[in-house]
Length: 371
Image (tube, rainbow, N blue to C red; front, top):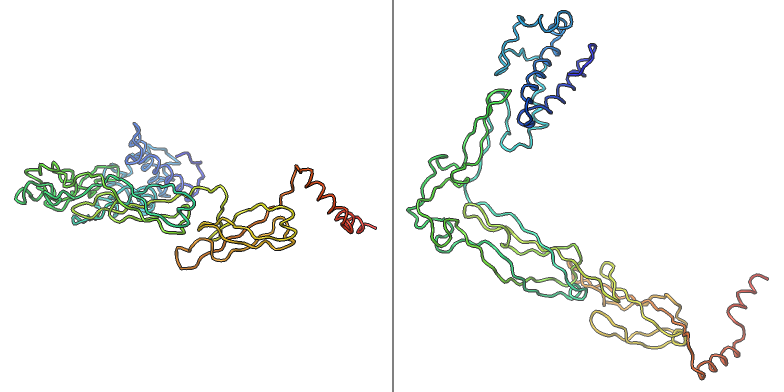
């Protein structure tokens, strides 16, 4: 076990747990793992018993050969010292092995399975939509493959009702008990019946329409209602378009995750829309009215005289409708003042006149602050 001679009881226990987990034959399928596992348990039974440990330290393994350890199989020779910890070990690495819910020496798993109708698993897909489609909402038709109950046999898979029999292997329970011989003795595990796939029934003559499957795969066109205000990452649910159910159970659901494409001019933050519009320096100085694009058409907006570059103006109620209420966001218009880089002769003369009539330049006012 890789322990020093003066190892403490806690060190012995830790080493045992680590090695037992590593070499348990239900986990480790390598050659020699089971033998190694037996050696580890034999060693732990000795080292966890102070009296046996003392004999082993003095006389080695020979001192224990007639000490009544008994055979390993079935744990008939284990005194029980320290083996109350086995439950903890099972819990740490057997918990995920379906069927072993009540694991113990010579015990069995008490697991049951409902042979009645079981709803199918959900399915997931993605859909890309345009920015304005997300803002306004839209209906899209998609074609999907889905398993539907066979109408000829009503989902039984049998040619007629008289062709349905109780499975002789599991006696209609859909489960069988499987015994597995391990280093810890005989374990019992309840598993799905392989002859009826857990249905509890056997079919004598199959339905010719679905070949006994009980379902047929169809291509269906379905309308997807994408609500106004939906955002990237949110989902739309289509009931009954998921995986088929078991034992006549209903289909699961289809969840469509929405991805909204970016827009060339509009951006969205929450339920508010943002857009940047260019205006000339003269319009920003003197003020003007412009028709601003929104997601619902153009809206007249007044640019106040003296509007500064980067200033935001609000158009109330022209944002995105909330999915959870009737509240609607706003649209914010950021003003980008554009300075002309090329002027006609007439425009240049006008700017020069304006410059000469100015009482004081902006820069000169700035310089005065340093005097």
